Image (cartoon, rainbow, N blue to C red):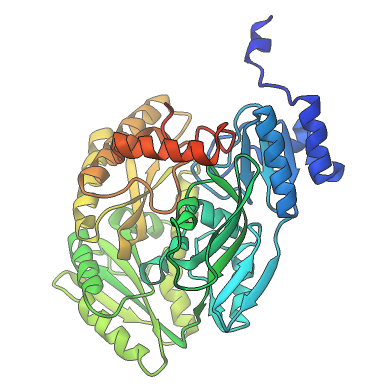
Length: 470
């Protein structure tokens, strides 16, 4: 056998191919490599060719695909629209991708019970529009809401700015229908806001990145739209002043619905491409939103503004209308395009540290930046300590990439030392898999692997993702 033959990925057995075709229909199964390639990547730089892509439209088809892959020991990776950043939807060599993009119905919006029932392929923004017609919203609001699916939000426990007040998908999901690794369907959770019967499998499956079960339906908890909102922007002399303001804001009774943060490097980056309209001495910036009843929101904004004031404050502005709100958010919205222009292949990490330790964390990142010669830009959701750390690197520069790897490892050590966690909303996937034993102890990892085997005894569901390899 030649070397190329030995290294070639497994070929999909004819019997498995036929069974998949029967499960979803010939027009819903791709096997030509040219057709399959676009389903072998996510928003990381990883890509792997799947042997087939199956498009499902109902739970029965999902179960049939899982049973086929389980019988033939074929790795199976579920996929929404591929907006994840950690490689969690990149298939294994020789694996099959199950695409939920055609399973995209909003089955019910129930205002009386404040819930929605949806399929996993529903786009987040489409759900928000449908809920808004009834005066509600679903709090998880990732930056990619216009193109990401609810199933993906649940798989990653992806949240966004509103999580500081309204929580993540785990706090906003009542129950799930899913298929485990044997092809058996299960129902978890409740249709009510209270329920303590049995173990909480709903919260266990959410955030598991398709390694335990494939979600086929979700019952989501809706929240009434606020009557009014106020948007503030505060600029500070340095990160310590901004971090002190964040701690003060989160310690007072009014919880903002968004509390976003940009450090000095991020501000400098945006200045190259956008008119910031902030003082030159600005070393950190906070974007703050407060919502609630119309007759209370101004007082709430005033209370939050008072908490934001300290000796390092350079300026505090409050938007009075939609045009001013758009102007205040201009800085934050200009950041991502600026970073893509400067470093289209940047390393984008998502970590969380206790709110009171944000300044210490940013100080540590500045030290690592100097030590390793890597430009680091930080922004994120300051209200819950969720910081997006961006290492600006060129993948074509081997020396820089080697230094970035050492810097990244040291950054993860710093997060753990500060009592933080290595992922807030981007998941683990492949990118962080080999680091998480720094956060989780051996007993916890053993229990998690045992749980995986109970849900997926043959290890076909998204193998190699989330947990370090044994």
